[in-house]
Length: 302
Image (cartoon, one colour):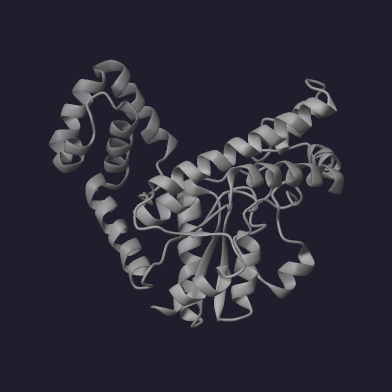
């Protein structure tokens, strides 16, 4: 993992040539088909030589959740192990990494009918009384959820009414499944850190400008031509794409768009570094000529 523009993909491809790995992308934008330039996605030619899982898996018109990522990513990890390969997860979507490592409950879906019934009960009784009801049906869950946290109370009650099973039991069962798969791999968490803030700020700025030169504006125009996609689509809210949409709508001019795109990308990199600096059990390496050798040595310690 690491901030945008630090060279994560290049490192993964270097490792691919040295050891038997399966590259799994952890990028919330590269999952979309046709979002190529603005996501920094490897070219189709590169992907033929260095296959990546979790790239181009959904249409731009579709929504994608962290829970869905967890399900899909765990399937890729299992596939890698079954093929006697080392799964190497590469990307900068820190929330995805966080929920994968720490577990995110993959709970059953709930029908609209159940949702409406629980919502009606909440409107009639209020959050505190519904929390008391949760204590009756699932004491363990009620101890972890505050009585004013209506969203989580609703979810726990919805799951119980839909399945007849306690929310806390389902969470514990699914966490065990995740822990079993991930712990069996002797998980190594590695982050790449830029060599200097000033230099990385310049790299980020040049990266966005390069995307514009490669045709990012034209890419977005083409995507927005589809009737099911608009600037409000989840895919178009990504850094870079959001700013180009504003430009195409006439809200800002070209220079403002470029400036806002660069600033948004820098803010993204800053948030990514905040995640990294607060992450437990993380091996942080500086970007340098020996990076690939250092990472390979860490992997070989398994």
